[in-house]
Amino acid sequence: MSLTLAKRRIQQLPIDWSTNHDAIFNSTILTDIPAALASWSSKRIILVYSKTLDAQTAHIKTLLTALGPLVAGTKSGVGAHSPYADVIAIARLLSATNADTLICIGSSSYSDACKNAASLHATLPAGFTAADMEALVDKDAGITAPMRNPTVKLILVPTSLSASEWNPISSATNPERKKQHFGTWTGGADLLLLDPEVASTAPQVLWLSSGVRAVDHCVETICNPDSNEAANGHAERGLRELLKGLREYKEGKEGADRGELLKGISECQVGAREAMIGLLVYRIPMGPSHAIGHQLGSVAGVMHGVTSCVMLAPVLRYTNGRNPKGQERVLRVFNDVLGWEEKEAADAVAKFVKLVGLPGSLKEVGVTEDSDVRLIADKTMTDAWGGKKRQLGTVEEVMAILNMAR
Image (cartoon, rainbow, N blue to C red):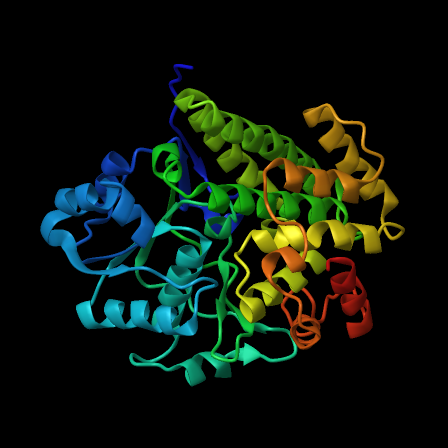
């Protein structure tokens, strides 16, 4: 399939703080990054980038050559779930070089680490520590009070679909393996560049699992009893784009059809934004799948995205009677887009996880010890989405869902 993808520039979100914070769909980073730097008169740039992308493609080396002496420092690699140590390292680079711009190319762990570093660089004194970070966090809610907006320009180039790039609030994992949340609702990235060619270099398991994470965003919006039709409309459109795009991506990979692959990536990137509108514009909280998934990732090291593959179906089974209309709507979308005749939303989600070839149980991701499962449940109760606005009232309910996921 021969395909030309039209470039499209939009305001990131339809809310006031997002004015002059843009996103470019079907971007080409080798032209769009230099253009942005010129418009900002940037002089000192820090580039944080994926080790895998650098090792397996020429994208990073070509960009570094194009940027030349503007590059004041680089960092290759960020740990899964954005460890505090990586956040601190990036912030110290910003301080040491007096950087005015931070560019990040990588998955959600990279995006979160760089957003956190930029916010903390503006909020805490230079040389801050993990203890200083932890002191900002409300321990019951798992999130900080609003922080200062970044003082450096921030460009994010995502290589996954977890959609962290759209969210001004970011997570990081502390030394005790607890995922905490940082930021301010008005401190998002200055520019998002959605480049399908760059995204196509992501490992297949990363793209597909983060796609299921974006599906999770849609599903938990629609199934939240406090949601509204405006938010649900965006979530449904996102879910349709994601299911279609993920299927095309997988078929393009398997059939060596580059055009279909890139088309699927582009559709997924549009869908990932729609998936976040409920949370970021209408402030509809994410639900138990996200809360449990955060801690499944930080406690057991399960890949971001795979956590949704494991947890979303059991959450839907457990909460089936709490918002049946929401689950019915989710089910209709799956059956309509994929031509299925499933009877339950949980079954449709589980079937889709199998379709894309990803693990769907705790056993499949190596979480079998009762002590680990209990630790995940305990930490969920003080997660940002499991805390004060929790949809599950007790740790026993969390354990019930985790046991269903075994």
